[in-house]
Length: 169
Image 1 (cartoon, rainbow, N blue to C red):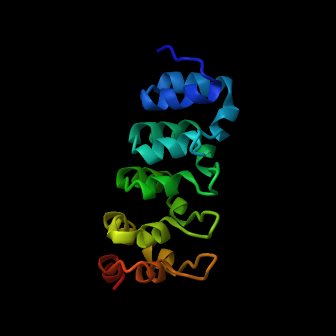
Image 2 (cartoon, one colour; image 1 turned 135 degrees about the horizontal axis):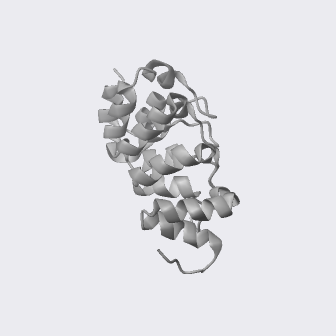
């Protein structure tokens, strides 16, 4: 598949949008630094794919370029955080299957994916919280405190997410 050459960075995101694994692999093998690049929204390629819920592209990037899960976005978050905020449980499952420890990854404010899901107003990410609390590591995940010394439950309470709050009981 041919891509417009509006800059090397943009062809990576175009390949992801087209779900073109072969094209993406070819681009990234020739220019591996593009794995760390960010788009106009500050997202790395893996974060972009995770935020869109493109499971097959996330799996491809995790398997072919595993170091990409450690690349920071401009907002000091990681790809797993973008999957969480998008409510993409299937993508979170791939991160978990790839490395169970990834659920403990903290963003620039010391928040894990459980912090983010519990904090999201209006119980918007309730299904993500249910998924995360179903994991064997949920007890450890519940205890992690962010930079403000808040647990995920504290954030649910502060955001008046009563449904999510009840899930912690």
